[in-house]
Each structure stands twice: as C-alpha cells, then as structure tokens.
Length: 400
Ligand SMILES: [Zn+2]
Image 1: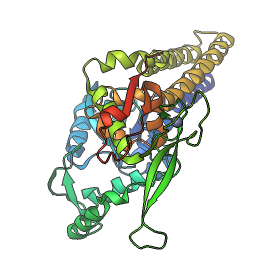
Image 2: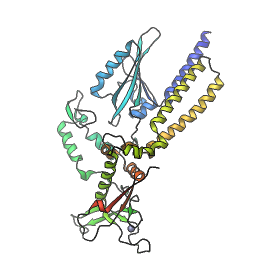
Image 3: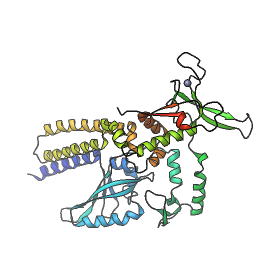
C-alpha cells in the first residue's frame, strides 16, 4: 500500500467517524489533555442544552460541583487503558439534574501518550422530559429559586442546603431567601389564560364540553372585586331535547386540583405501570433507542470495513442509505413519543407530582386526555361546600 493510499483510507475513515459522531443517539463529549471540551456532538447539545460553540475550549459546565472529584478520578483511572462505565448525574443548562450512564475511555496517540478522553453519555432510564428550549414561567421560577445563585450548595434532587459552595454567589443568601419567599406566593402561579386544564376537555353532565370562563364577585369598580375562573357548559342556555339542564357552572381551580390529585394517586398505584404502560407499546422509547444504537453501531462497523477495503463501496453506500432512512424514522418516532406519550413521564417517576408540576399545561392536558374522562355535575342550589367526589366523575380510559 502506498503512503497516498493509506492517507486516503485514513481521511475516509475520519470522515466516516465524524458522520457517525454527528448522528449518534448518545451524547459524545471528548476532553483534551487539559480537560477542556474538544468535541461536543449534536446529541450532547440535546441532552445538556449547551451548544458546542458554548462549551468547546472550556471546562464542562455539566458536572455538579460535588461530582467533580469523581469525574477527575475516573479520568485518572482510565489513563492506563480500558474503560469505565458508571452511573452518575449531570446538570442541564436549565439547571435540572439528569441521571446518566457514562462510558469513559482515554484517547491514546501512536506512542502511548494520553491525548484526552471520550465520554459517551446516555440518559439513564431512556426517559426524556419534553423540553421546549424556551423560557417558561416554570423554568424561570426554578432558576430564581435555585440556592446555587446565592452560593449555597444543595443535595441533588432535593431542596436540602448542605452549606456554602466554593463558587461566587450572584446575590446574597438574604436576597435570595426574600426572592424565594415572594416567588412562593401561590398568587404568582402561571396565568393559565385560555389554556386551562379542563377547558374543552371536561364534560358537562349533559354530554357537552365545558368552556373556561370568568365569573366576578363584587361590583364593577369595587377594589375588592375578584375574578373567579369557572367551567361552564357550552350549552348552558340550551333547553333543547337531549340536553336538559341544569348545566354546569363551577369554580375551576378546585376541580383542577381534584382531578390532578385523582390522576397522581392513580399513577402511584403499583399496578398503574401495567395498566397505562400498554399505551406506550406503540412507541417503546427505550427499545427504539436500543435499535437506533444497534444499527448506527452496525453502520460504523461497515464503514470501517469499507474503509479497510473489505466491503465494496456500492454495497456500503446502499446500506448506509437504508440505515439512515431507518434512523430518521426512529428519530421521528422518539420525537413523537416525547410529545404524545406524556403519560409515560409520570409512570415510574419517584414522585409523579414533581414531574407533573413541571409539565407544560398542554402536556398535562394530553395526559388527562389519554387516561381520564371527566364529567362535571352541577352542585345543588345553595351548596357552599360541594363534595367533589360526587360532582367530579372520573372514568379511566382503557389503554388503546
Ligand atoms: Zn350542559
């Protein structure tokens, strides 16, 4: 083999390797000898929220303070060769903590010198929380109430503060505590606007859907006047045959709380996973991810064989075309599963309520639509303390 031929093979293998890294489902992060980021693939952008441009050349932002020692120890351990696979946590750009499994190995040059390290990271349980990538009321609150901005260290996945961190606080702990108190005021809850939990989703006892509306208590211009969100039957004036009254007009917020409570109780039942998981059979995300990995690994092997001259180029290109089409299809299915099969987010969560509170109301509505059928019955006249177990009828949908 001439030097020129060898060079062509190397160049082609490099191009193939780059393509594989670009389309890999797993986040791939490479560190240089000075432990700054050298490579950050698109999957890493998706997993951690930072773009390559934001992190290349810098120490990674994704390692929790208390796990930096672990990270360094792992890099030292693999220096002599081999690789380590370990479960740990990383931090998303929006400051949420992600459970990940990381495979680490050292990059060694021709003479045995360590020139860096590669981390391949995958979401520990294959679950993705839908992340819109835009600032929401919830994400802003979550960041403002994070003790880390006051220089305080906390246990991951909890609110427990375990002392001062060794980074500079952005604001004083006193200011942070005051801000946190203000933000905890329930009156600051995100305005639900027309996107209410139950509007056009819950039913009146007459069979029509309810709309979200506002009722006022107090005279117009009166400073004590308050607005009360209500659910009102779309057919509230109907006296028609088949839709006899009385139709529903009920304060919405207590109904929403009650529906959420029933849903979360249901999701905490031991057999909930069995009952509702069947819904996700159409899009088994962990299985799709496994398939994606298997075929992209297969493609990488074929690319290697082709580069080494073991496989005719035409066959490789044909296979690559088919594999790429299947990868696109899998990606689309995973993306859809994230949007539609939101129910899976609650199943198996340590605390479904915590996951629920972080979901966008449109996703919450999708979950309710998947598993519940809510019918509202109007309370009797003069009923001041309605019994919600009687007035809100919950029917559980059979999984389809
Ligand atoms: Zn009605």
